[in-house]
Length: 339
View 1 (cartoon, helix red, strand yellow):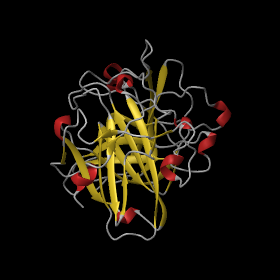
View 2: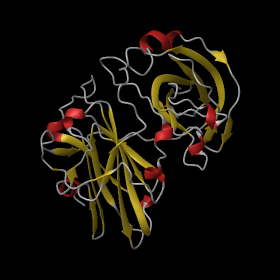
View 3: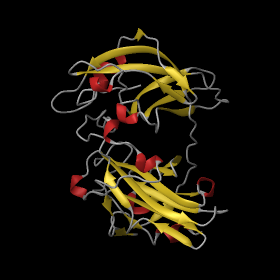
View 4: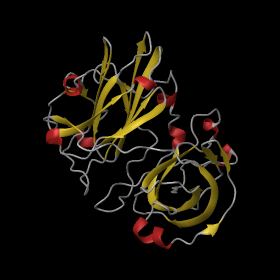
C-alpha cells in the first residue's frame, strides 16, 4: 500500500473547533467487519499533536515524530497481527496542547488522520467515525513550565474506557463525524513518513510500594501541583502495601487534604537494559468488573532505567485514578497524584 496515497483519501477530524483548543484530550473510534484474518493490513496514522493507537483493545503504537505542519510526519505499520475475523475496532487517543512549547509549534489546528487497507476493504477517518473530548481529563491545569506542557488531572470514574476495550460501547456524549477537513487543508499542506524509528514500548510491572509524601496544590483555579517548588523537596516516608497480580498492581489511596496532593511511589523491579537506556511505561489497573466501584484504573508513570543502574523516577503523570477502600468514601473531586 502506498501509505501517503491512502492518507490523501482520508480526512482530518477533531471534536471541537480551533478556538476551543487548550490542553485537549480527544477520543476516536471506528468499527468494521472482516471475513477473515488478513495476511497484511497496512495502516497509516498521524495526529496533531500526538496520538496513541489501539486495535481491538490492545495498545499498538504512539506518534507521530516531531515535525512542522507544512509537511507533517505520519506513521505506517502492518496491523494484521491485531485483527481477527468478525468485528474489529480501531480506537485512537489524541492530544493537542493548544499552545506552543519548546518541542511543538501550535498552528491553531488539531486533528487525527488514519487510513487502513485490508484487501478490498478500506477504512479512513471521515464520515461514520465517532469522536468526543475525553470527559475524564481536566483542561484548566497548570503548566509544568513555559517550555513544557500542562499537568494532567484525570478522574477515571468519568471514563469507563469501554470505547477502548469493549466491542460495544455507549455512544452517549459522542459525535458521529459527518465530514472532516480534506488532506492538504491548512496548516497540513503535505505529509511525510517519519524520519526516525519509533520508540519501542515494554510494560514493566510494579511489585511493591516504597514511599509516600504530601505537597501543596496550585491555587488561582489551576489544578495541579507546584512542581518547580514542591517535587524536588518532598519528604518521603517508607510505606508498605499493595498487591501484584501478573502485570497489574493494586493499592489503596486515602483522600488528600484540601489544597494538597498525595504522592505515592510504587517501584518496578530492576530492568535488564542490555546496555541501553529504556523508557518504561507501567500500567496499573485495567478493564475489570470493579472499575465502577472506584478501583484504581489506568495509572501510568514514566521511569527511565539507565544501563546497569536503578530506575530514576520522572515527575510525569500519564493517568491517575484513586482506589478507595469503600466507594462511598470517594469525594466529588479526586486528589492529584503522581508516581
